[in-house]
Image (tube, rainbow, N blue to C red; front, side, top):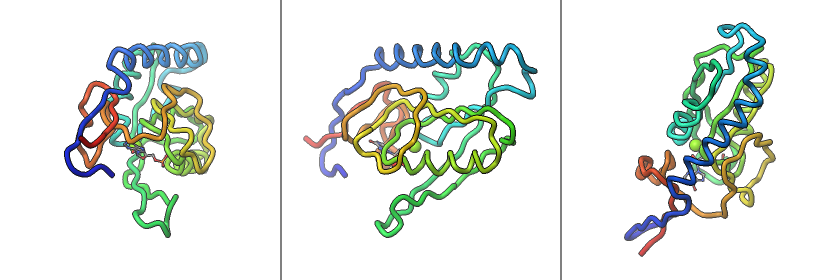
Length: 185
Ligand code: IMP
Ligand code: MG
């Protein structure tokens, strides 16, 4: 973890984020719009679930570009601190919406070890979701400990600690409009 004087180096500029989020929305529109048109919009809307708090900036930008009816909900998770419990994920806030029989789009800021998404995926399947697709803005692929199938991925990045566009270091930097790497001067 960085200590001392922190410096943020831009890794993914705002324009690149905007362009990529628009492309991801187009892809999702293509995949879901037709099936949504065939269904009853109220009972069958796609349930979009963000993982708090990091995914919020990405989720809002993405969902505004979807052209079919969606519902929105959130999980909040926390990892246990010690190495004895590495990989154990605690659900701090559960979703409010019913999941059984629903098509779900799970939206995450970054996939690191994969434990968070693996746990949530297991829970959604246990509750009887009809389908679950994963959408992640960033993928730190080389850090993966458990496999998770990312259906929509924004950018694959190196093993760097990044902040901005929702991502924090100690609750700071979330409102940067770009993704940056936290470094020390
Ligand atoms: P995972 O369970 O290891 O995949 O952890 C994913 C969570 O760790 C993300 O939802 C983030 O909250 C956090 N995280 C992982 N890498 C970073 C990073 O580089 N910057 C900020 N948060 C991160
Ligand atoms: Mg997160």
